[in-house]
Length: 492
Image (cartoon, rainbow, N blue to C red; front, side, top):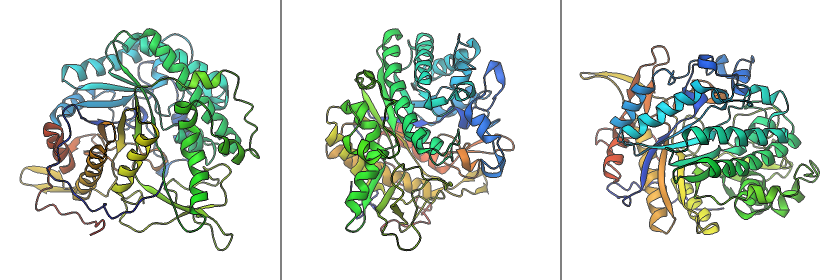
C-alpha cells in the first residue's frame, strides 16, 4: 500500500458524521483492571511476563493498573459524562476460567455482567473482546498458542461467556491484534510469553486464527440477542521505498496482514506467504478442515491504526534499519524477512516514536474496503501517547494536551474523507479511555484522554476528553480551543 502525505495537515472542523456513526472508546483488561488476585482470578501470561526481571520498563506490572475492577461504577459515570456511544472492553480469560479450562468462575462473570448492565443503563453500547492477550498461564505451561488444544479451550471459554452475557452484548470481537500476540509474543519476545522462535510464531498465528473460527461457532450457538460478530486486526500500512520497495511491501504484507485476512476473510493462506516461510516451517500444523472453520462470516472488521511503515529490501551495506515502531528485541517479529529494512521517517512523532500520518488511515480504510467491499468496518483503535503535563488552574488541575487534540482532529478528518469516498465505516473508538499499563513500556506512555494519577488513581479528563465529548454529542468534528495550539506540525 502506498500513499502521499499531502493531506496530513487537514483539519476538518465542523465535518459531520452520518447518523448512526458510533463514537466510542476502548480499553483492555490487563491494562486497566488491576485486582489480579481478586475473586478467584487466575494468573495470566502477562502477570508472569511483567514479574520477570528485565521484561518491562522499571519492572512495572498490571497488579494495580487503574484499579478499574474496584472503580467500575465511577468509570461508567465518567464514560457517560463523555457522551460515549459505545465502550469496547476486553474480558480477562483468567477471571472466567482461572486455568483456562473447567467451570466458570462466577465472580468473574458477575464483574462483566455488572459492567455491561452499567453500560446499558447509561445508554452506552457494550462491545466485548474475548482476547486481548491475557492467556491463562496454565495453558501457556502446556504450550500456549503453539498448542492446538489452546484453540479448543478458547472455544469453550467463548461458549461460557456467550451463555452468560450473550443476551446483552451488541458486538462480539474474538481477538484483538492477533499479529501482536503471535509475533511480538513468539518471534521477537518483547510481549508475553517472551519467546523468540519464528516457527512458533507462525504456529501461534494459525492457532489464533483457528480459535477465532471456533469461537464464532460457539457464540452463534448460544447468544440469545442479535449481535454482530467481528475480529480486530492491526493491519500494517506499508509504503515502499526505492526499486525494492514493492517487493518489501509484498513480503511484509504477507506475514503482517494477509496471514490473517487470507484465512479469515478469503478462506486460505496466501501462496506467497507459504513460499516465503518454507524455510521456517512446513505448515504441517494446518489440518484438514481448518480453513472452513476459520473462514466464518463476520459482520464487521475492526481496524487498529497508529502509524505507517516505510520499507525496502536491505542491500547488505551499513547497519540494517529496524524502525518498525515496535519495542526492539533480540530477534525480529517478522519471520523470513530479516533482509528487509524499516526506514526511519520524518517527524513529527508521538512519544512512542510513531510517525503522525492521518492519510495512512484514510488510505488503509479505502484499501480494505476495496478488497472486502461487502464488509462493514470499524476503527477500533486510534490514538496517541504524548508527554502530558498537569497544570494548576483557578478551576483546579488540568491537562492541556493540544497535540493529542490535534492528532484526533486530523485522524477523524481522514476517517470522514474515507467515508465520503465510499468506505463502509460504521464507527471510531479512541485509544484509550484511560492512561494505562502500556505492556513492555509499563506506565511510561500515556494514551488516555483521561489522565490517571498512578499514586492516587484519581481520574482527570484532559482537554482531549472534553473535545471528544463534544464530538460524541454532535457527531461533528469540533475545532480546538483557539488558545490551545499544538506544539507539533504535520505538513504545515
